[in-house]
Length: 119
Image (cartoon, rainbow, N blue to C red):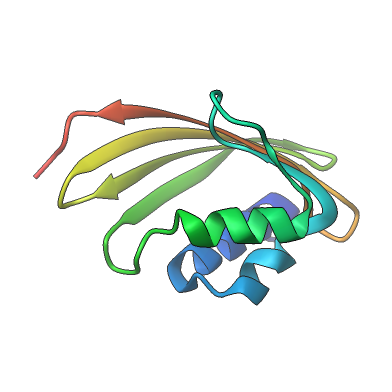
C-alpha cells in the first residue's frame, strides 16, 4: 500500500520533471509555506510557490533524484534523497513535509548539502 507521503513525493518528482504549473500547484494547499533557502523569505501561498518554482526550475533530463521515506506519521513526512546533476553537482537532501487531509503540502522545508560530484 502506497502512503500519502510516497504519493506526494512521487507527484513532486513528476512536477519537477514536467515543470507544469498545474502539477506544481496540485502539490500544495492554497496557503502553503515553501522554505528552501535560509537567506530568503519563504514562498507563501500556492501562486507564489508556483511562480518561484518556474523562476528557478531545473530543465528535464539535467538531473536525477533518488529518495526514500525516513518517517511518516499522520501527515508528517521526512524524506531523504540525493539529487544528481551529472554536468555539475550532487546534493544530499532532507525534506520535511506536512500534508493536509487531501494529501497536499501545507508546509515544505528543504535542507541540502553539496556532495563531491560523482562521474
